[in-house]
Image (cartoon, rainbow, N blue to C red; front, top):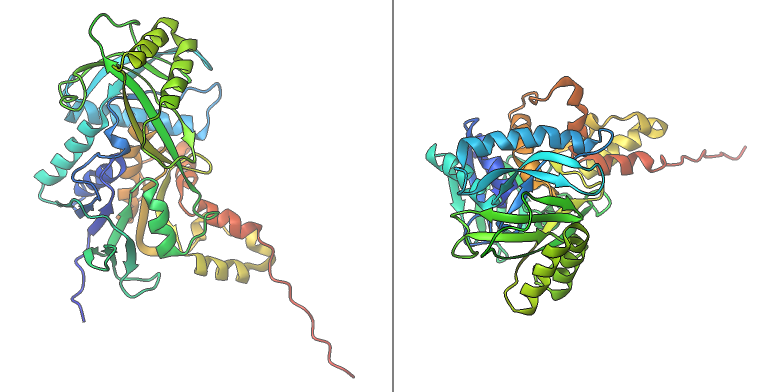
Length: 405
């Protein structure tokens, strides 16, 4: 019989913005974390974006996403200012919205990998972080094989145990779908995660930028981004346009067609910049970056504990015709199984804020959210889809048994 697992130790699967944010949020609370990723180091997938935009989600009337973004942008800006030197991972700017809700807004240009590394450095410095690279996780298995498990094992494809802890946080973007569906038996309606490919078009900037600040409509045009951390993979001074948003495409392959779509979007924003993109492509000087992001059916992240589908079915069956009155908070959960995923194109905005709320939840504490925003946590609950699905299902029909006279 194996020895009891130590408390306040979590496996974190996925070393992008979400996983790194979870590691540092837990480290600040005294947790020990084991970070596992299939790549040779952190920020090798969607978080390897050369430059991204941190800015508000502007809408005419408040929406769930715009309210989340307002909290997340302020939170992330504080992280950048504290941990990453300007010019070595980010730079403040403004952005001109040219389409819906036009205007000029405070923003920042960010190389996500710099922030990921800063968070991991902080967690390492406190001695609370262990990393396992080149370690693809094929399955998660509960210790005890029940929702009331005493721990979790991350297994390789050959069945080897890569790591084990009482708690696991799956933060593997679209890779979260297969891992969570396998260990929870949730179907695609209860766990509706989708791949979304994004491709950025970029090139070295050797002369003056074509605009004084970034512009946004169908994509973001960055006229100039300078970062000492871009080389050797990218030039230290670039312009960029993107990214595309290809729903359902699970591929990181670059395509001329996607460059063409970026050029078309840029044409509507800045015709001279579109001509520059097309000329660079014709001359073989255009660079590109493509990766797969993960989005949910309602385009909001998943943050929290996973539902126990079997126990949820039993709960709804017992509720009968009153199943519509069962609240989301009553959904049974797997012990020690959490996720932070489906951040879509809002990883820079929401990863740290969500990780902070998740860490509080894992510690059994109330989240640090203003009272007027408490409903936002329910909007991110990973159980929301299974709960809605179960509430819609009709209660079982009972038939009276007629006994012959």
